[in-house]
Image 1 (cartoon, rainbow, N blue to C red):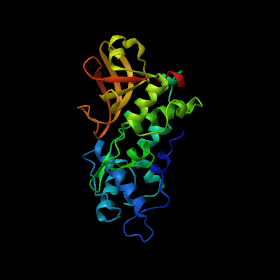
Image 2: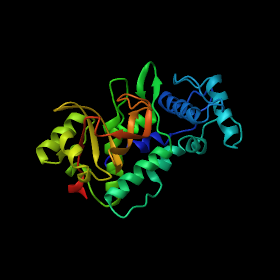
Image 3: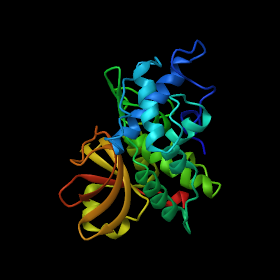
Image 4: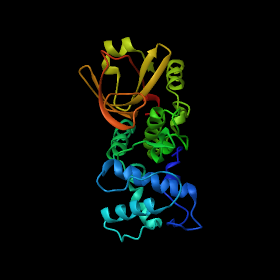
Length: 272
């Protein structure tokens, strides 16, 4: 893979524990982040805690609660084994084998694998669009201004293409910008515009990228198309929510009506 930030999000350099002089603030914040992400899918576990880079009694208690939930000894100490359990969802998303007979199927199945592991953003020090998943998709960038929908799309395509020994950057530049991908699609003749998609939806295939159009040359959200049926696209999108926001909080499977929404489609066919 080209995008390898996930490796840093799934490892700590040394054991971290309450009051230790050898604690590393970045490592502690990473632990606190994963404790909060566990709380997103397990709200009764008691692992939600402040993300302040300090391993105090609150973090220790949250760690013990996590250990209890996972059937581990309740030491309150985070060694490599405990941290591996904390970040297991990301390891599953990025490292578990993905089946598929071609790039399009691999893209869809890779997106489904990420979706199954509940990628979610956190608010850290008042900044949304933050946390391990965002940094993994955005190459260590995070914060309110870092919308991460394109980072998600390119990470999925990168992961799928790498299984076939392909470099997604031959299709489009590494970017976090919908506009950059849209203009690249225009220049390469790979972008089907709204009217064309509505008139001939059969040109759209699973694994292609939709871009939500603000104006003909300005796009503000993106995601992956997993299926086409009737007037609808099934999609998997990052940085959205149940309302289809362009600045939501996680990865969701959605349905979008391309007859009523302004959706351009970028074809990945040259990479296939």
